Amino acid sequence: MNFGDIVELEFGVPVGSEAGFLRPGVVLTGDAFLRYRPSSVFVVPLTSTHRTFPSHIQIDADHGNGLQETSYAMVEQLRSVAVERCAPSSGNVGPTITHQLLDIVSMIMGMP
Image (cartoon, rainbow, N blue to C red; front, side, top):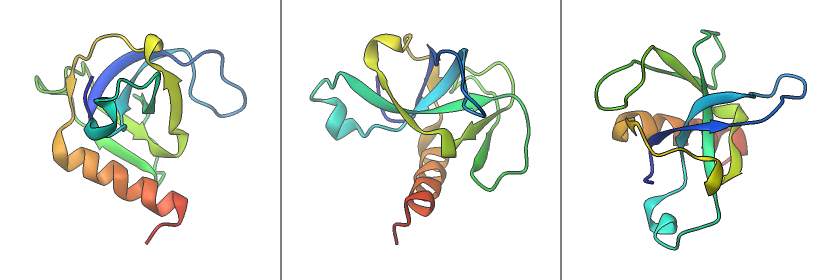
């Protein structure tokens, strides 16, 4: 597993507007930390539903990321999940998308 990988995982039964059920997500745990083989990682869930939220990033399907359709990263739904929940990676979103995701995480967290 690497920073920016797309993994499929079971997010469980949602409460309210949480992302839930089986869906892909983007790993946002940094590679430097992943070398320590953590028991949990940060993942941003994806949806195929287009909404005009400023915290959503469009990810077009391509061979590099393994997505089957255009998806939208719901950055406001960032969560920590057990590594055991994550299926092997289907691909990676690459540096452009991961930097956009991190910019939104910074905005949400109030970081400069």
